[in-house]
Length: 277
Image (spheres, rainbow, N blue to C red):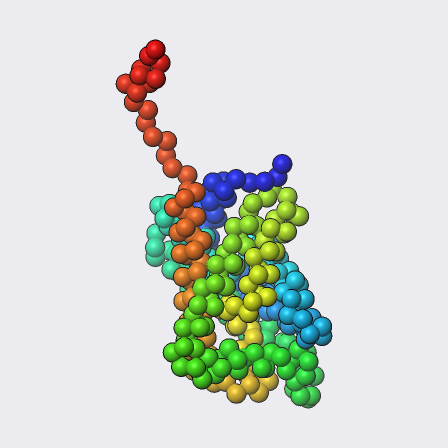
């Protein structure tokens, strides 16, 4: 049996969070940039499949390939770190300052990698801006507007909506991290991690790193979105929502119920009573 028990999964997450918090800026930037690029590639692949078939579910079935590569290679994704590193903090292995530093460097790395792939994607799908966006390129441009000015048009209702979608998204993404540790076999880890990621993408929830590719790429192809629109109506609320979803619904909840606890001392008097006739 290659199944890993929940208590062992949490122990592994605490150890992983401790290791992640100990990485230096160079490692975090490189691993974060690679993760941003891989997630961007998976996103464009999934959006292309959905555009070609007319079925979002087809794209959702494909999208987790990027997340699986990130997990198996041990790269850095800030949304996953929102659950993993806090577990090490709650276990007393890492200080809060180290956690915050980790998040900042990984966030920056994810942003660099996502935007870099976005630029390469635009060159590839528009023949270096010699043809108008079409197919998947046009879909990316439309999504960039829907994910920013689309919410802005709704005012505070839009802000609440994007925040809640972000919470729900990272609940599933971090469950993908957890499920990826529930097996000792590579196939088992892939299959388990695949399911929660499929769920978030199929329902159109908001993931800050995915949007680091989609929105800048859409802007490069003429989306009517400004930098302020992106920051206020997506980057900030989605990042905060992802933080809440990953920490509250995964890290805190699972730590409280599954974290290893020190064995309680056994009182001699109680032992004597149990053996008395």
